[in-house]
Image (tube, one colour):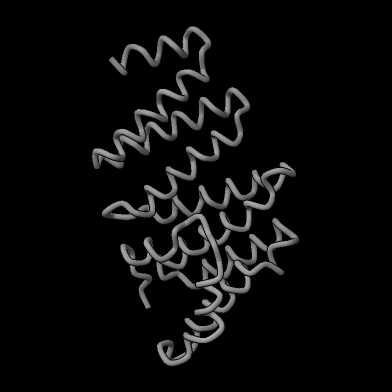
Amino acid sequence: MEREALPRLVDAGRLSQAAKLHNELAELLEAEGMPEQAIENFEKASDLFSAENATTSSHKALIRVAHLCATLDSPQLDRAADIFGRVGQECLSNNLLKFQAKGYFFNGFLCILARTDVVAAEAALNRFKEMDYTFPGSRECKLCEDILQVRALPDRRVRAGGQTGRAVCSLRIGFRFAGWCADRRVAS
């Protein structure tokens, strides 16, 4: 039924309805434990929402794609980091959404760091600082810098507590940091 109804809605110019149906289908697939198919449908929903200039809905669908990519059995962290960075950059062009960019940049940084590529994580952090002039002064950026410093220390376990630990606890980020880290341990 999905194969027939959704293309007909698109052909009829009812992109918003088709996007909502793709989104609902993706949520059902995600609940059923079929993340690859859910990713595909969230991407289609995002494309259709973009065609209708529904930026916020498009971003929501893309963020779901990024979360699913990061939590797959064989994570697609590069893809997730790219999506977080792209959505963060798009948020900067909208006055209502620009405050969300910091959280997306932080999530993108975590995805890159989870690949254990510290050089790429540093490069991404510098790129995010260049994109958003408010990011260098944010708590998210400070935490990213602290994480990079801790990873550079020879005995990370001893020195990793203190300010950085309190910063993690005080941040409220959309990535559900604690739950994600329980599933995907950042390699040391």
